[in-house]
Amino acid sequence: MKISTSQYFTTMNNLMTEQHGKIAKLQAQLSVGRKNVTPSTDVKATTSSLKLSDVISKQQDDIANLKNVNAGYKEEESIMMSMSNMMIRMQDISVAARSDTYASSDIDIFAIEVEGYMDDIRGLANSRDSNGHFMFSGTKVTTLPFTKNAAGTVIYNGNQTEPKLELDTGYKLPLSISGNKLAGVITRGATKIDMFQVMQDFVTALKANNKVGVDTAIDELKVVSNNLNKNLVDNGLRQNLVDQRRDIGEGKILIYKGLLSDAQDVDYATAITQLSSDMLALEAAQSTFAKVSQLSLFS
Image (cartoon, rainbow, N blue to C red; front, top):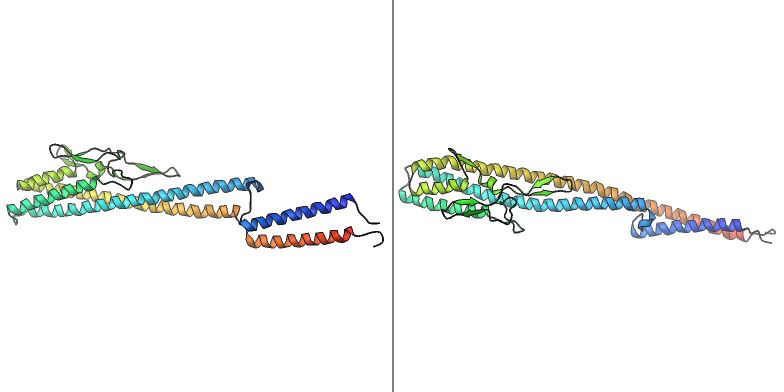
């Protein structure tokens, strides 16, 4: 007669079923490299992973935006450097024209050269970015910033509001300077003028060989040059700020990815050790069950 109770068989069956489940879970985790093979495996861990993934995604978006912003800064820097170089040449011309070294025909050539620089600078001030927007129109990005009126005077058509990019952190990063800031404000007596008026009046003084007008240009061109240099310094600071923000973002991503890995990824060494242990335990249980189930009062 065999010894057999429903309680014994039920208990052993439950234990082996549970052990099978543990092994199946570990095998599934090892096959995909994740702790939670399906979201239902651990709802809390899955929710935490989704939140971390969302934070990482937003940081990556910010870094991509910062790269685009920095490309715009470098373009702006190149434009202002070109303007600054032409301004330096115009300053040299103003000093030369003030001396008695050059004949009136030479002064006329100087005037033509300065007119060329003035047109070049206006062309640069009307530059577009990679999106086709005017860089120096403020927030009126589809409006041509600098145009000439019937009298030949350069008019600024943009506004003084500088466009900004809001990052995920809530920080607003200025994208470019306004044309008003680019052209500068020069005080001439009770009048406020900009660099285009300075250049226009300089050309007029050269054509008339007006020494007083050239003297005025010497002083005002220096102010214009200083304004461009100030804008270049500001540009450099913005580039440094972008680099810092990118470094911060990349650092955050490393931290968040580490946390995400802890929440999601399987520790292979630990999982394999546990799998081996569970399989040995299952084999032992099966062997024990097989032997015990064959026992009788006479064996």
